[in-house]
Image 1 (cartoon, rainbow, N blue to C red):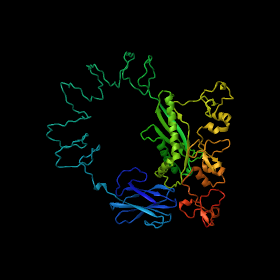
Image 2 (tube, helix red, strand yellow):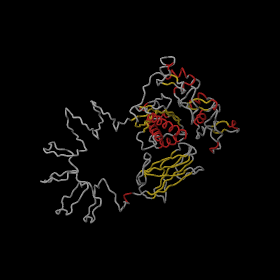
Image 3 (tube, helix red, strand yellow):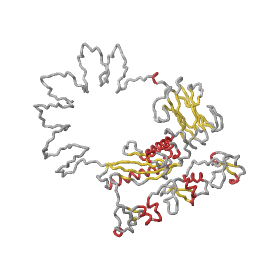
Image 4 (cartoon, rainbow, N blue to C red):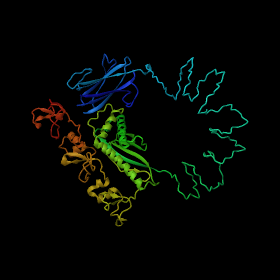
Length: 592
């Protein structure tokens, strides 16, 4: 079984969450869930306007993006000449064919029948009609008005009132819970004003104050928008229970500040920025500007889904800050060992104004640890690649690119804060007391190191070179650089990090050279290994199926030329995966 499931929905491929009905003449998207055994196979899409007598018309053909389960999507226009329609998805060996009934041992096809109904031909009926915030521009007209008035009358008067008002006013006038916000141009006059004041007094007070102002034992709870000014303001012995609030503090502080602290102190927001870097085993720096921008969009969504997993948390965001060493402009200039650099920004309310309490420091550490753990766990489990692959499929501009056997790796930096950020002393000393394996800049150097240039140096790099010369890499960055180095004993390349995934432990940069990717590491440090196999082994890849080229079979005990592929794939010409670089590979069996 190659075709597992077919789904059809309204909308195009860029509208994945459309819930609109399927309508004749509208756009529909077919989603085919398939299991591909080769990226050389093909998947055909067809439609028929009459499912009872299908005349299949070809929509298009797609190639699998990798060997395994995946979703392929194709859009088309729903025919208008029939209700019960059908679509067909056909998986076949990668030969040239336009038939909806292709033959072959590996051919598989499934059909899906559905109804496309014009909603205007079937209006809904309801005993409880819905309320509309927008009245109809073409209301119905009746010579016999309803004897039962609406239980939900309009709150907004008609914009087209009757030209012939009734000659007999209503005996029981209507009552409204919401009086008109338009006062009468001819208000009534009364010699005896109402004893009950209006619940909706005028918002524009008179510019001529009353000569007989009212007196009240209870002053207004709403302060005046235009308070009086005085050159000699009085001092109150009773401070206000509801003091005024201002986003612009006064330039003249009080001469008699309160001895009681505020019951509602100001809130200080701390911003925590955690930077990170990542790369994949595809040359994205050769993409066009539009393709690179699409890949950045897909990656940003992927990072955000793991580090800001709570959709209600508005205090978390993620963005890619550099692509191929170009900064935010996303030009293709490779000047960094990483393809993409990003940052995750989160905020929280501090306990103290300087954001330096134990709780504030713990909050910063917790946020940074959560970001680092979320990314590393997602990469190690394969979830990061799964979400990234799905986002790539849904991103415009990447349709023509085939991402095969995708792998990714990366690292995160120490967090940077805004409020509690320390400038530092500029004096670095070796931390031999706590044994952290690095140099500190906290101004707490022991007494025998103070003012001694033999112990205190001007930069972290100088201090690491002098006092941790056997592990300067670990001293400079305790979590490792995330770059690659050769594990000669196991004949693979590993990343410079402590544990997990493809980590090989912290590298000794005095003897081990670091590389931006495993392929460069394999080519330079493990030259006797076939580079494609070495790269796949370094990634611990489960989807590598060989190069597909041919080599002499006598190296595996047969007297014919065999293909560089896994025999478990079912291909009888496979002789096994080539592991050594000395084996000569040929394009075809005939050349071999």
